[in-house]
Length: 135
Image (cartoon, rainbow, N blue to C red; front, side, top):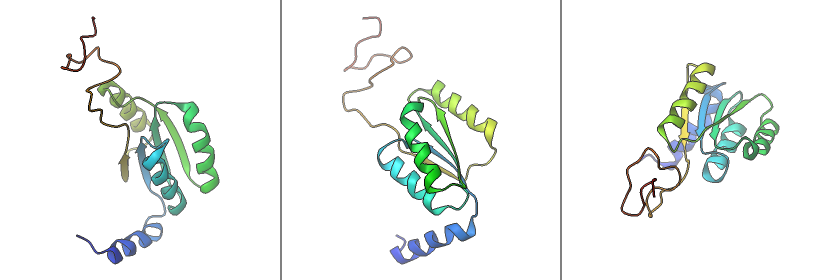
């Protein structure tokens, strides 16, 4: 394991080593993802950030806050639900239209349900905890 002093030293060099970083934050409109995104915006001089989430309305205040934290940053929200592969494909296509480089990918979306899959089930076989979509 890396010593905490070594990690702190490496972190302190980020803003001088990288004047600009491109990052994708998936699931950063609340919780740990949002906190990490806010810290990233505060410490990276000229970040370009793509924030993936399910609701533009939920992200509106966050985007405003991020511009206050770092006026030089570029913060773009991409609406998408990554709980299905077609949602991931959509998000990836949108990001590929905007950039060819990603320096950081931070994923903290959703949670694991012990009751099995919840929500859209049309493309999935039924589980013991979940009836068939036809029923």
